[in-house]
Length: 300
Image (cartoon, rainbow, N blue to C red; front, side):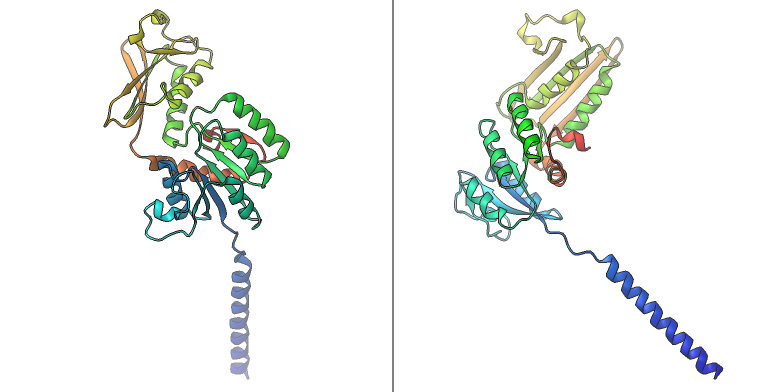
């Protein structure tokens, strides 16, 4: 009897453990959350194609729409030289794409790689369909950002306006701000492989950040008469020198100095792929916003 009792208790203990294990497995398994639907406006541009590939590879999101005026009708996967088609044609009508995707009721984000003249209308359309926006458009005017901020506040809809998607560039800006409290001389030197608007948005952002700190730099050489000395941004003596030479990386260097010492911070971008970690971070963060945020650095 003792043996039978022991066997009975062992069997019940084994069953109890199995039940607990099953309960643990059942409780710890949550229903999968649907992917974030990502619509890329400007999908055929170099940065747009990189974004298509990056979003396709990222966990928890998927490309749901591709907008551009080029390659209309072609599969965006094939446009991006992917191994398999994504079965998503490039469309030229943003409203049509947004309307179609909104019917799924899924979380959706519109990435805007277009230009400053269309950003406001694009964000308004996305908001009308209940979608948030990530805007990466060089030279967007602050008046546009202010108008979008008011609009997003009223609509309680999130939007991230990112002057840069480069995490390295943001870290350089943060380091430059820290250094500015210890040096009275500063100049910015940048290089780009091709001619664009200069100073670049990155150099302008750094100069503005330093100027807004209330410091006066380069007191002994603040004159703007000699053009070879570069362009002074703001009223605080922050000079920017821009070089354009084919083959050079997109590079930004900030030099600080005082007698007997030079401190330099440098950041190079050799490929648009460097912007993709910042873009993926922006997509993950913007779905939780109910207002406009200016600058990816708010999430680092």
